[in-house]
Image 1 (cartoon, one colour):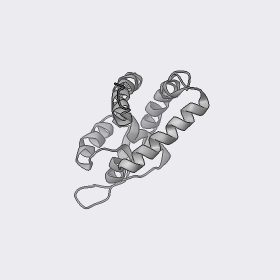
Image 2 (image 1 turned 30 degrees about the vertical axis):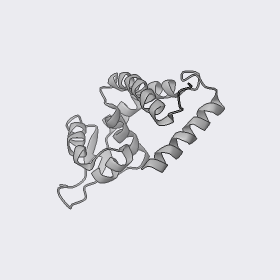
Image 3 (image 1 turned 120 degrees about the vertical axis):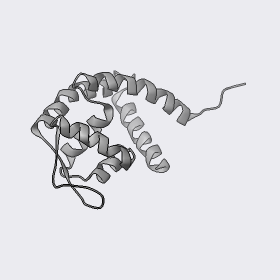
Length: 139
């Protein structure tokens, strides 16, 4: 009897392997994958709120306080205003944050290279589109 296709289970299994590889890439710059996500989001769109960042990096808003605090303590981001419950305080990337982000990008690009993941360029682009479709459908 043939095993059924379980694409989302394959995605989970693959995500564990990919997460380990990205953790190694980000560790070289002293970042976690989620910290990298925050820095990348701020590079694309400066002055986001913690709630905006939580939505973008797909984490619960409650976990953002600790995450932002860790980045503030390292000087990788700056918060505009006092923040607090009900008060928007934008978060911006600092020069040190931009430098940490730039230090990780060669590893990120190398890990995403089609040859690294066993695909040609067209198959990699198709996979990216399919993954975006699945993520959007399940959000």
